[in-house]
Each structure stands twice: as structure tokens, then as C-alpha cells.
Length: 264
Image 1: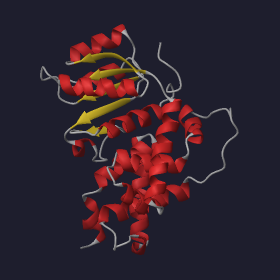
Image 2 (image 1 turned 135 degrees about the vertical axis):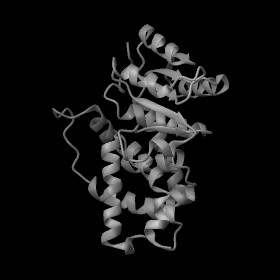
Image 3 (image 1 turned 90 degrees about the vertical axis):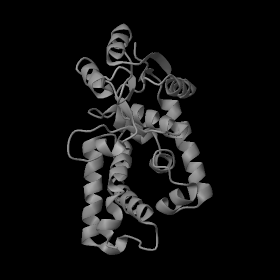
């Protein structure tokens, strides 16, 4: 099987990882393109003895690491975003391990293979990243979810991370109403809501009035990970694991310029 055919099914998920790692669709997708260009230039960097998905992510991580080795700026340097400041505060390798394990669902052994380390070391990296992220971010969260049990599960996870929940909306109309009452610092939105309305439409209306990071919850992530149009940087796939939700929340807030403070 050719490398192109072997990796094509994994590209939507590599885009998800890249966007979460870099914080934006444009930056993440650019790194994916660079990875593909590197494979075209030198196919030997794709380790054929490994499962295709692991080999692909390993090439990507190698590309990412080689292009992100820069001297740390002086603290307080003007013109730097909060995300750049947070990137300096959070150790890069633990963040990669954290996302590979909790968002992409790799086992610790697979994370270790991708990062060229041991499973024990990978576990330590994941734990360290979780601690570092939790120390940096706390905000108010709006949940847009029409299934009560799922909404309660998400609420519990949000609160466990130290955030407050401004409310739970089951419809487009409820979401807009809750935002008017209390402005959130993060929105977690299902795609299909109880009354047949769209979580996407609700989020788009919210974003017309406030600038807030958004995490979408969907059973069909491939539909929002094509790379062909403006798409969300952060997605949770149903059915989800608690660790994936926590990772997405931490990463979304990590890259938001307001993540270091509570929203009034």
C-alpha cells in the first residue's frame, strides 16, 4: 500500500491534533501541509514498520519540534499574545504527550513511540501537562447540550477543572438568552439541539457579539475537519472520554487571550 493511501484516513484527525497544538485552524493545517510535503520529499522518514497512524504522527511531531525550537522571548515583551506567553509557561513536550493521549486516544506505549521515549516517561509527561494547564486557566463556561445526562457529565468535568458553569442551554434561543445574562469565557456546544435548532447557528450568533473560544461536540468530526473551509480548532467526538473533554477545555482556554482571568 502506498503511503498516500495509508495515511489518507488519518488526516482529519491529524488536523485536529495540529489545530489543538497550535491553537488555530490556519496554523495547524499549515503544519499538516508541511508534514505531507516532507513525506513527498523524503518517504524514508515514514517508518513503515510502525502502524500508519503512529508513523504519520511521528513525522508530524518531528516537523513540529524542529520548527518550534526558538529562543524564549523576554517576559513582558510587547506585541506578544497571551497564547505566546502561555506557550512559554507550558512545557512543549508535556503538551504534545497530553494531546496525543487524551485527545487522539493513543495508548501510553503509542505516545512513547511517537515521542521517542518510554511509556513511563510518557505517563509523567501527560501528568505534568495536566498540572501545568490547570494552574493557568479558570473561567466561566456556557454549555449548549440538549441531552440532560451528557450536560450534567460535562458540567461536573468543567467544575472539576476549577471553572464555573454559567448555565446549560438546550436550544439556540436558550443559549442566546444565557449569554445576555452572563457572558461566558468558554462555550461548549453540541451541533444538533433539542428543538431541531443548530448549535453552529447559536455559536455564530454568539460570536457576532462577543469574542469567546468555542469547543464543538459532535458524533461526526470528519464533517468539520476537511480543511476546505473555516472550521473549529477544537472538537470533542461523541461518545467522548472525560479526559478528552478536559484536554479540549484546557487547550481552548490555553490559547485564548482571556484565559488567564475570570470573565466578569
